[in-house]
Image (cartoon, rainbow, N blue to C red):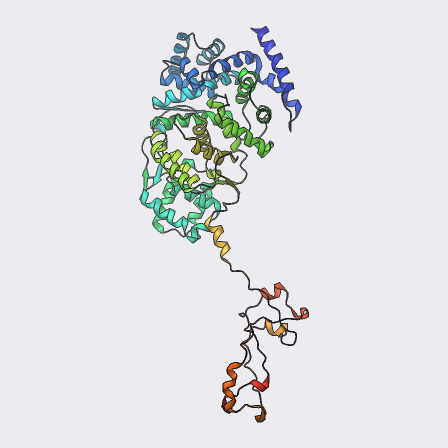
Length: 556
C-alpha cells in the first residue's frame, strides 16, 4: 500500500506541474501532494468508486444505517470531537461499521479509533475528506429520524430554537409600507431586513449586522411605522410570539436535512472564505482522479485556486462565471457535497448588492415553487430567504448559515426537484455570476429597476435657451432680480400720428405677431449656471412696435 501511495503521489506531482498556472503562484501546486497525505491514493480510489454512482453510490454503502449512527458519521465528517457526541451513539456507529465489510478499510479503521477514542479525538482532514462523500446520505437519514447535526454535536428537532414570522396580514401591511415613498427611500440595510420580515422570513436568516441596524432604526425617531407594526417587527427580531407574530411550528425532515448539510458546508469553508484543509484534500483527490479528464482549462484554473487556499475574489469574474456554468452543467462529476461547497465559496465574491431582473412569468414560477415545494419539503426558513430574491433585494442581507443552506439546495443536497430555469436564477443570485440563457443580473448599490431610482427621473428638462436682439435684451442684473416686472411706460403720441376711426378696419390686415424667438448678442448671454439660478419664472417675450401703429384707447 505504501508503494502504491508513493506512485500515486508521484503521478499527482507530475499532473500538478502540467496544470494551467494562469494568475496563480506556481509554488502553491506542491501543496496538492502535501494536502493528500498518506491517504492520497486511497482517497482518489474512494472518490472514483463512490462518485461513479453519485449519491446512489454512497447511499448503497450506507444501506441499513440507523438515523443516530448516520448522525454520528456526519459529525465525524464535520470534524466534531468525540466528546460532543454521546458514547452510546458512537458505540452504535462502531457496531454498524464492524458489521459492514463494504465500508472502505482505511476509513473504517480511522472511524473505529475515533468512536472508541478520547473525548478530544478528531478525525484527520484526509479522513474527513473521504467521509465527506457520505454527508448527503447521512444528513437525509438523520433528518428522517428527526435529528440534525452541527459542529457542536447531534440534536433532536425539538431542540431547534422556535422560529416566528409575521402574520399574513402584517406581512401585507409591511409590504405596502415598503412600496410607498418612505419605504423606497430607506437605507438599503433597513429595507433589506424589513423585506425579509415582510416576505415571511425568520430572524435566523438575517445577517447579524443587519439585525443590529434594524433594531436601532426601529427604536429611533426616524422609524415611521405604526406603533403596532413597529412592536410586531421588534418581537420578530427577538424571536418572540406576540400580537401579529406567530410560531411556524415543526421543521419538516427535508428542512432538518438542509440544516445538517448547511452545517457541513460551513465546516468545509473557513470564515475568511477559503476552503478548509478537508475540502482542499477532497478537491485535490478529485483532480487526480479519472473523473476530472473533461474539465476545461479555465475551470481547472479556478479549482487550482481553491486548492491553493485562494479567495473567490482572487480570480477574475469571467473565471468565476466559468466555474458556475460548469457546476450547473451535466459535465460536472463532483459530488453534491463539494459542488455545494464551491457554490458557497463563490458567494464570498459578492462585494456589492446583486439582484436578478425577473420577468412576470418567472416570478410566478418561483412563487409556485416556493409555496408548492419549498414550504412543504424544506420549511419557512428557505422560502423566506427566497422572498428576498423575489423582492429584488440582495443575498448579502442573509446570514452565512442561510447562504450555506441555499448552496445545499442548488447543489442538490436538499433532495428536492428544481427546474433548470429556477436553479440558474438562484445560482446567479448566490454567486453573482452571469449564466448564459438566464435573466440578467444587476450589480451595484441598488437595482436599476428600483422604484426609488425611477422617481429621480421625474425632474423636467430645462427650457431651451433662446437668443435675443442685443438692443432688446434686458441686462443680466434685470434678469436676476427677483422683483416683479415694472409696468410698461406711458407713451405720449403725436395726435397727428393717430389713425382715424375709418382706418381701423384696415388693421385686420396687419401681419400676425412674430413668434417669441429673438436673437441675442453673445456678450450678454447668461451662462447655464446663471440661468439655473433664476428664481423668477421665464419672462414673457418683449415686443417692440412702431409708434405709428399703436392704438390709444382714448383716441377710439
